Image (tube, rainbow, N blue to C red):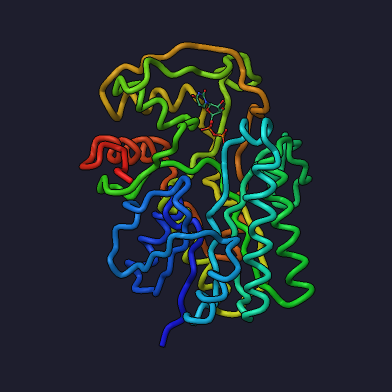
Length: 333
Ligand code: UDP
């Protein structure tokens, strides 16, 4: 019978899209999520089994690994608010670094030797060269980035020690949705650019603030690499196959390789919605680099993956479908 993939944090934004894609590919998926930030309603397929609980609950993990034939764990269960990580670093080191050690101990003891990690462009810190290649210096500028980089290092050391094979996927700016309005991005509080632009258009927030117009970029606003959440989900499916097929540990960027400015996102939102964006121009946000763009060629090489959505309008349009769809961009529970 086919092996099971355990997805921790599968009820969050990127997790729920990946879980739904894996289920659509007829794979056996078990989700473990504590629902602190995740949403039970984000798991839309009946074929997906769900356990509410913590990845640091060792007796629960022993039960899960004993009762299921799990070969790979995909880990999405991290906190992601950079500003909060600066104010409360221990919350981030506990949840994003220390708690996964307990999961890894259980995996080691049960002989589970595949791990896919949601990593981040934040492991690079302020870029010294753009587009960013994986050999770029690893010098995070906030505890969030460090919490992920430390876990990447732990995974590498577990490979040396007991043969754990890992795929560390360094996402750039995740955006968009499945497209049918049933799942999408629903963070509380919402700090990301595209949802805030659309919330402002809907009048759900008074206006959105552009953080800085004096950057050294063509239009003065920050440039990012917006990557569609369905492309991220596809990369996870490919990373899963890589590990199931006996592949070596890998770490690679997931991005389009294209830079898009904040002003260009505002233009795309006007085009997609046909509405004006209530906007104010404010100061820079602490810790924001001017330009973050991936060189995604390694992912192409090792996973045969590349972004299929490259126009930021696609990302905005699919985020808009979620916010105007049957759930109006919100989960009940
Ligand atoms: N941004 C902005 N207003 C907002 C949210 C974000 O101007 O309300 C800018 C932010 O400064 C950055 C870009 O949009 O340049 C993307 O920010 P986001 O928080 O979405 O992702 P990050 O790049 O920080 O991971």
